Image 1 (cartoon, rainbow, N blue to C red):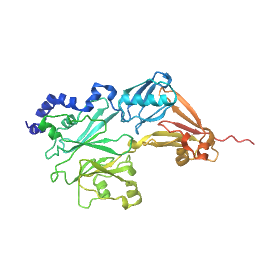
Image 2: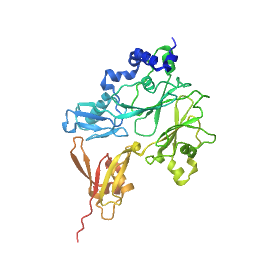
Image 3: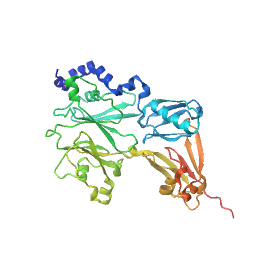
Image 4: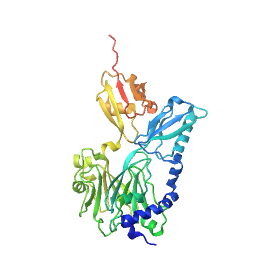
Amino acid sequence: MKVWGPFRQLPSWVLLALTLGAHCAAADPAADELADPGSRVIMANDRIRIDIVEAPDMSGVYTVAGNGTMDLDLVGRVQVEGKTIREAEELLANQLEASYFRQATVRVEIAEFVEGALMILGAVQNPGTLPIKGDQVITLIESIVSVGGFADRAADDQVHILRWRPGGRMARDTVVVNVKAMFDSLDFSKDQYLRPRDIIYVPFRSGQEGADEFLALGEVGTPGFNPYTEGMDIIRAVVAAGGVSREARMDAARILRPDGNGGYSMIAVDLARIFGEANMEQNIPVFPGDILFVPSVQALVGGKVYFMGAVNQPGVVALPSSGEASLARTLFAQVGFNQFANRNSVKLIRKSPDGSLREMVVDVGAILDKGDFSDDIPLQDEDVVTVPERIFSF
């Protein structure tokens, strides 16, 4: 039974999808998340509630940072993105038992799901975005229905899902789905559940409309498909896409290039060096089918920390999403001590999950003098750091 014609006519297509939707979800391993909430995968920016029976004062609601980590007293920074609820419970219990408790009983649940949007682009009737929360269930087929189905000459056997890899960096994994085969065979076991911030990209058939285009995404003037011209490079592509916005993270642009095997290779591009320093080494060629992605500053910032007192550059410091910023290193490399600073009594004020404030006094001077950063303190969003002045006696 061929259903591909009706698939392009929404009313019939939707009726067919509704009729067969149960088969689709039941056969997909991701459907386990629906039957068992403990198998739901934790995502960056989720807020998770942690209950520790043996240490009630540590229980509370914690935010998963953009780099996929959370900071728990006694345990420290833990990578939880990409783990299921049950895996996170086991991980935290094991770490607590390794150093503090003979037995730790940990319960984890999602207190607030991350919000985001699906970006649906390429050979579809109405490209655009679709708002979604982490607790919503939507499949690839349903997302394509929401934008009117496939356009003519769509490569419907090569639908790409581009998904952030855990860790907050710029890399994405690519899942290629043959939607055409699912409808030809009426076997929907290969349909995919989608997540916030997934990009669904439907290429055009080679040699047809769209084959001589590149796609610009993110903080560009006119996101979307742009005509490819012979000899196109990064500068010409940025100009064709309407330039970049003020929110663009210029040094973190990427080219996603089809690798011929259904996936994409990633090429880092530093637009700041091209446009700020006229460094033409970064002005690489752009080819048909390439995706130029310029992220926003907010997308790559893991939070902010406030520095006050006897420092050279008081104010706000943005944390990288990689989660690698620490107190002593940041003070040494970015903020600096002034001549009156008491490096041995640096105060760090941090908000606990219950809203109360905790104060730590850190001997940053000793850390820097020894060059041993094992006792350095990882920084978190909304930390406040105060460097007091030395007390002089005369």
